[in-house]
Each structure stands twice: as structure tokens, then as C-alpha cells.
Amino acid sequence: MNKCRKIKPGSVLGIICPSGHPKTIDAVNKFCELLTSHGYNFKLGKSVTAVEGYLAGSDMLRAEDLMEMFKDDTVDAILCFKGGYGAQRILPYLDFEEIKRHPKLLIGFSDITVLLNTLYQFSSMPTVHGEMGACMQHYEKFTFEHFFETLGSGFKTPLKNPTKELNVINEGVAEGVLVGGNLTLVYALMGTPYEIDFKDKILFIEDVNEAPYSVDRMLSALSLSGKLKEVKGVICGYFTGCDSEENQTVDELLVHYLKPLNVPVVTNFQSGHNKPFINVPVGLKVKLDTYNKCVTVLESLYED
Image 1 (cartoon, rainbow, N blue to C red):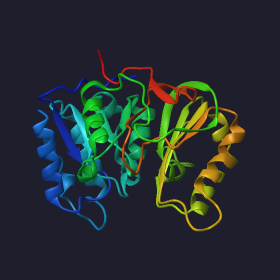
Image 2: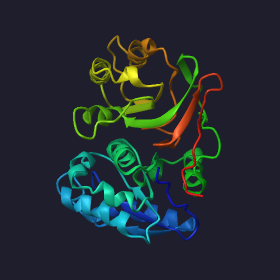
Image 3: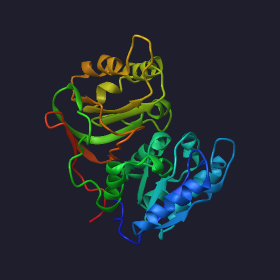
Image 4: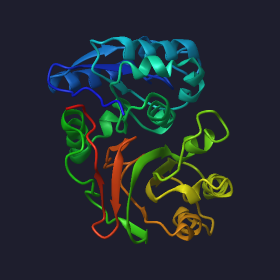
């Protein structure tokens, strides 16, 4: 496993848009000001100001932007400014062996799920399912402090919901490398060379604005493929805006598909498309403990 270099005051944080483009450059500037106020320097990628339809420039431009940030040894970590759509399209243009030679932290969520998992699987480096700059105006105290705590020191304490009780579907304790992220993207990678390996893993899933039947379809596919049977535990984050007025809730679907697995399963973990936002590592070993209602990261994010 290639650990990431430690982030400290004065570190240079590369900012890119591997998916959609920012709504305004003003939002990017405000995020840069926030980073500067905490003692960090920044480098803007060319994708930040590029526009091609709903994408932040062409597939090749976005791929080259990511590659250049990894190869630039003056850049200490890479922050994805926003999600949207498009990260999956750049996968064929990434040189995972070259990335492996320049390990550094990458943070993002939502559409960035595809990068979080492929960088772990193909470049043997941990990543972080974490908050992004485009959401900065919605940061509240916990999310704000936790974001910079993760940047500075990784995961030193158990991850616990700050405001709401964790819901337990199946009790137990399980250990395994955490994978996953946005359910739609986990589903979208199935049947591709970039399909996520679930074997003996702790699966994390979340989503936003998907109707119950859509969540049902994706969970059904994961179940029918046999992949769900391979996991050691499941952590379900926010499913924001996913319920409807129909007589079927996402919570009921999660019970239907996950309870029969007979592994520890929790829901309502506060990570994903809502606030407060708990950052979680992709590619590091964690312990899911339903009795203490927490997730403990068992490996260091940063090199010693």
C-alpha cells in the first residue's frame, strides 16, 4: 500500500474538476481563500476554468489535469472541487502505474467515487470520501472542523455520528478494507474493467435524489451479481431526497437487501449528500462496531 505524504501548513493543495464545472469562479476563489486562511497553498488545475457542456472540459483535458497534479511533486494533495458527472469518462486515459509512483491524497465524493476506488484498486493508494469545495457555503461547525482535521492528521479517533443515532440492521463487529461511495457510481462500474472488488470488504454506500425504485434496481443488481454476499459489513450513509410518497422507503429496501447477508449493517451514518459530513477512507482497513456505533480506522492515512 502506498501511503500518502503528510499534509502540513505550507503544503500545496491541487484543486481540480474531474467531472462537472463550477457554477462560478467566485466559489472557487472563496474556497482558495479558506485554504489560505488555514495555512495552505493551492494550485488550480486547468479543468477548474474549462467548460464543455456540463463537463469541466474534454475528457482528455480532465484526465491530463489529474495526471499532471499527481506527477507534480510540488503538489502534496489533490482536492476535487465538485462532482456532477464525468469522472467515469476519464478512466481509460489515466496511467495508474504513473500515479502509483507519485502517491498523494485525493479527496472528493459523489461522482468522484469512481476515482476513489480505482486509485485504490489500480494504484494501491488510499483516498478519502470527503467534502468538496463546491459545498463550502453549506459547511457547518462539525463538517468544517472535521475536513481540516482529516487534512492535517488523518483519522485519529473513531468515526461517530455527531447529531443523529446510528441505526443498526444487523449487530456485530467486522473488519475489512472500506470501499464504495455513491451507490449510483458503484453500480455504474459493474461489468467494466473498473468494477469494485467487494471480497472481504466493508462496503459504504450513499446516494441522492434517486427514487426508491432506482435504489431498488441498483441494490437488486448488486444482490443478483453475488457481490453483496462477498462483503464483511455494510455502512449506509445519507440517502437524501430518495424517498417518495409511494408506499416504499429506502430504509425498507436496505433492510430487504442487506439484513439477509448476516453481517454487521448500519444505516443513517452521517456521510454523503447532506450535513454534517463524516469523511471516510477508501482503501484503508476499518472496524465497524455496531455495539459502540462507530467506525474505527485501523491504518494510517499518511506515511510515517
